[in-house]
Image (cartoon, rainbow, N blue to C red; front, side, top):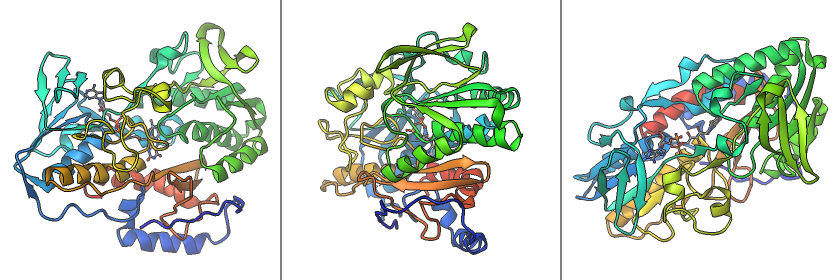
Length: 455
Ligand SMILES: Cc1cc2nc3c(=O)[nH]c(=O)nc-3n(C[C@H](O)[C@H](O)[C@H](O)COP(=O)(O)OP(=O)(O)OC[C@H]3O[C@@H](n4cnc5c(N)ncnc54)[C@H](O)[C@@H]3O)c2cc1C
């Protein structure tokens, strides 16, 4: 269970002295099995009691974190259903570990797994990509020319990194000319580490960008900046680096207490902030970036740049009738139009969604996936059973905001932007060693348990 508190008047403080007590409590909690809940949403979520007999034909599009977790849950809760999952991707990437690879703590092979290890045998896996959603005909079409009908559809396609929206940028540039990007792939995270390693030895000007709108793990661009700063300091090279964070708006983080903390923390650590700076172009040969600002375009030379591309729904989804047709979630990224609590499509009652592709006010973390998938699955099952869907997602999301090697802040909040800490002994207003240990040691096993639909 999560506790809801609103401590907006509290100040964030530096690590406290009660480390021994906290360590004891964490170990106690982990011993009770709490570690599997560390990606958020509280303790174990029970599978629906008693499998329901049905001949429903369910199609899941996207075999990432949300799609695989849903496939496992559905296959356990339904007896006789035909469940198909569509995705051509065979390797499974543990994306939350990309930050640790890009900043030198992990090797990339630790992130690489295979979807086949997690998909239940009773689920048909079509290794293909959906190119067209036709919700009027309850059908999807794939790249190889198949059409697949469904009674119920679960959309879990994740999102698309839109590198093309930055003039002169392409993913192949990551790892060259001082360009890094934590978001793309394990290999490119490793190449990003080579750039950060070099920058924190040689020094120069570092630009840390953040795309506007909904992005996955919105803490990642901040973590990359803080871990780079921390590394340069530990190497004794901090005064060789000029660090500039480029915010596309007037904030650093959506949760207001954390925003206030970061707006103090960055200047305290000598990271200056350029507000209303959106990366619109890059000239790799000249190591120059062009930003759209309130005063027109501005060019800034760099030695290292962390590029964060805009993110949007994959084209097949974004161009379909399933996407928001108007309003902020249409303009921001053509996200899937679901009710933000039931995860049911707002116009097509037999369609549900979960994960990075949905157009909801906050989310786009594995922690949100863990909270959303049981809701989407339960409501889908209720409809199959002829009942009203009643499960509700409260917007829970979480981010172990790593502020330096060995420390961080566990930020958990909901749609109301209230802090909802799962662990009473870890203050969400303090830097602490526990969020680092979670990120470094405990989240990956918890993530894998989520894939199996066990939590
Ligand atoms: C750098 C980084 C750091 C992160 N850190 C954290 C963290 O600390 N904590 C946290 O909770 N979360 C974190 N996350 C976020 C988390 O990893 C994602 O939110 C989560 O993986 C999203 O799961 P998903 O299933 O929605 O998408 P994905 O896991 O990306 O899967 C989407 C799948 O859909 C498939 N697909 C796409 N289009 C189609 C199509 N047309 N047809 C068929 N299949 C399709 C893709 O091939 C893919 O396999 C981080 C992410 C990144 C990148």
